[in-house]
Image (cartoon, rainbow, N blue to C red; front, side, top):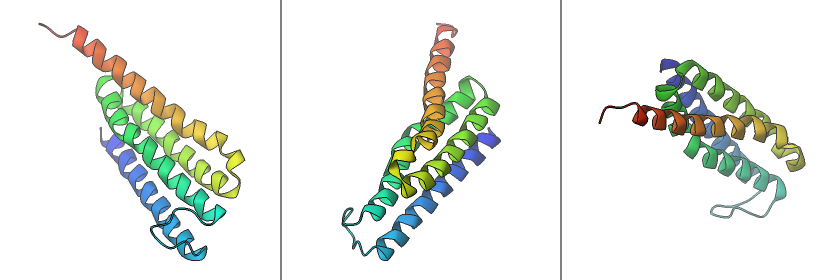
Length: 131
């Protein structure tokens, strides 16, 4: 589980870096808070941050539960792919939103596997539990 916690901490730091990039873009493109529109490039940074937050809601509990019920090492590996995918997503989406597919797939795919695996593992654990 130590590897899982390391991966979660890295994912949270990555999210912090994305949030910081949004703040920098807000200044660079003169989009005053609380506005979230007004400059197309700023909006790309903002969407990366929001999409990452949306995935984190599933990623964090998914990786922990998968690690408990299935495999901590596999969970950590999937988590590493998620982080790499988010990096690719960040740079490709900011450059051209049409080129975000690889990064999205490399981050959303592992999240889906983690959540589905966690569900199956928890259900299997429930079925093998004494009444």
